Structure formats: C-alpha cells, structure tokens
Image 1 (cartoon, rainbow, N blue to C red):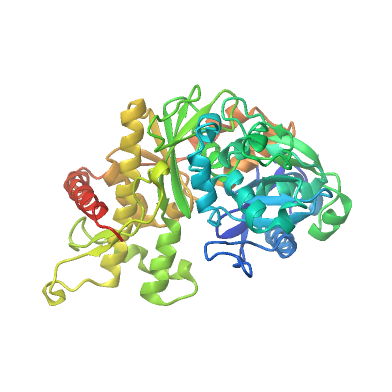
Image 2: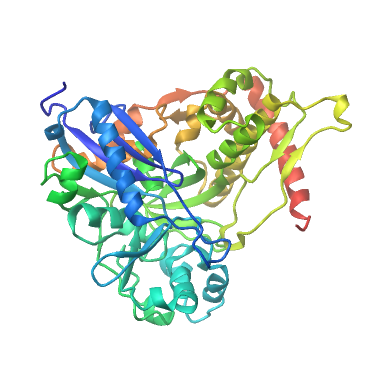
Length: 506
C-alpha cells in the first residue's frame, strides 16, 4: 500500500455532462487513477418534453460509490488524501429550500425554459448578456427560475436560493454554501467583470424571492469534510474541501493555458474553444461568450463547437449497436487513422460547427455522399472518419472566429475525452495546420482541479505556477504538410456545404 504524503495526493470530483468522475493524483503529472459512473437523468412527471433532472439523493450516493471505487483502485490509505476539490458542468443548477435541501436538480441540457428565456432576451430594461457575458436567456438560471414560478409554484414558493452543481456538492461535503464565481458567471448568476453575485437581476426579473449566496474565488477552501459524509466516503473528517472552477476553465488550467493570447480547446461531450484575455472582452454580435478564468485577472472569450463527444458516442451506438461505446471507439480507431483525408467522399454535418450563441436552435444536418450508393458504398469506418473530420472542421471554424476577433493565437492546446481517440488528434492537427499541445490522458478537467487543490491547501506553488508546469507536460503534435494541404480544400468545401444546409428549414 502507498503511504506517506510525498508527493501529496488529492481527490477531484467532476460532475460532467454524462458521468461523475473521481480522479486521484498529485498536483502535477498524470493522474494516479480515475473512476467514473454514468449520471442517471430522468424526465419529470408532468414536465415538458425538454425537461431533464437528476435525483439529488441518488446522485450523492453515486458520488460516494465512485469515490470509494477510486480510493480502492489507487491503493492509497485514506489518510494520504490531503485535499478534495469539486468541479462540475456549466449551467447545471440546484434549487435549495431554507434548510439547504435540494428541491430541484437539473443538468445543463434541461431546456424547459425556452419561452421564459425569450422573455428575458426581449426585456429591454435588463441586459443579462452585458452583466454576465452569457446568454441566451434560456441557458441562464433566471429562465429556469421563471419557469418554476409560472409552472411549478409549489416548488418555487419553497425555494430560497440557487447554485451550481459543484456548489451543491461542496455544501453536502462541508455544510457551507457559496457560489464559485467562475461557475456562477456561466449560468448568469455572477457578474463577469467582478465575479460578485448578480443579485440585482433577481428583483429586475420579478424573482425577488430568490437570494443568491456569496461568491468565492476559484480554488478557495470552503470548509472541512464533515463527519457523516466522511464516514460514507471512507475518508477521515477534516480534509479541506476546495471549490474549483467549472469543468471547462479547470480544463484550461490542466492544459497550462493561462497567458493572454493562448487558446485552449476542451473537447469532451461538447467542445469549448477559449482564448485567454487580460480583461473582459465582449463580442458585439453575442455569438461568443465572455467568462472568467480560474487565474486572477484573466478572462476568456469562448466559441463553442457544440456536441462532439456526445455525438460520437451516439454515432458509435448507431453504427455498432454496442452499449459500451468506448470499446467500439477503440476498436475502429486504428482503421480510421489509416484512411487518407477526403478519400471516403463523405461529408458529415452532425451538429459540431460554430454555434452562434445568440441564435441557438435546431439546424439541418446529416451525412452527404455520392449516390447511387452502389457507385461508392459508404461504410461504417468511413462514416466515423467523416464525423471526426466534421468535429475538427467545427473547431477550426471557432478558432477562425477567435482569430478574427483577437488575432492569431500565441499557442494552442487541446484536451478532453476526444483526444483519447488517436485518429482525432492527427486529423485535428492537419485541419488546424499548426502545432498543438495535447494532454494525452484526456482527463484535462481533473488535472486542473488537482493543481487548484494543491495551490489552495498551501502544499505547493501558486495556481499560475502550476499552470506553467502543466504546459510543459503536453505532448506536441505537428501537422502532416501534405494532409494539411488536402484539408484546406476539404474545409473550404465543408463550409460551402454548411452554408447551403443553413438555408434549409427544418
């Protein structure tokens, strides 16, 4: 059994879009172990078709069992864990009553409040975008609160406050409720310039019954692990618990992306492309978000390519009919990599593109290939290859938008679950036609969280210094010059066809 605390080991809890992940590791370097469990969502009885929730009690039990699994796999003694950190998906929300008990828990893809969001966007007296850097209204916490006020008054009348998913998990671990400011901004609950709670928005949107908790800076020690939950986890009480930044911004730290002008691509269930800036910078067209970095006096401007990992998992299930999509992806990876760029004559438009945040909605997509099918029959490997090229083209479109807005990037780094697909890394380097640094483990968010925990508990250098170290850990990938030239033409054609598809109404 591993004992002692040199190097110290930390435990990061990440509530993602599809899984709860628990990673144990040191402040730098590859994780020691990661355990993951799928999150169970459900559609509430009597709710709209777009409503999605999760059960807080069952989910807390899932977190406990995943922590226990990670501890068992790590072969560490419970006393070797020097700190715990929590991060989560953005736009996930929990409504709490006066006693701090959850009345509702919903993920980022709970779209029940489309009409309430449109009402917020049309309110000329209140500009949520200007204050928080985020929209449209339907993606903010305020829209869901308005939905509950209008459609579920029994829930709304008992609600006293709202917070992000990670904030709620920290509350369960410590008994202390605060909002991590970087996460708060992502759901419209925090002011992007200062990180303070956006308290003025509640009465302005006729939601004065809701009060917002105080905010804290990313990497703050919120409290100590309390006895009852510590016993369930199999850990000693009193371990410091840290509020880490949300998954995407923690991912930037895991990639070492912290200097102004650097670009970080976190390609997981969805893909965010973020450029670090030295002050809040706004896109006047509201196509891109403005957010906060986990490092002080740093902000980000973000383009989003939409669902990538989520789309790829769906495609693998469709093509192979397996419940274990990871096995399917691993099985076809080498065969996909063997295909020459453009040789399949298949163009994929399965969603990933430049997502204009002010005009989020359904688009026309699909697969294009020569017909009659007998001329050049498309197969599963070719379709999977075209999908990965689609993802890379969508990322390039976002990078081009950032470049047109802020100039060329000084560096580009990529992480997230998609980089575990070896073919995707090669395709992306060719499509972007530049050197990219890659966090090969794919556990980018967890890497950033581990470094935040260490910096916050006083066991190492500052979070900025950890970011610099993380940058040196990246594997460097250079594009193949011949493939890059081919992709230049393929990307141009993809953009042309994408614009044509945009003209079709669903």
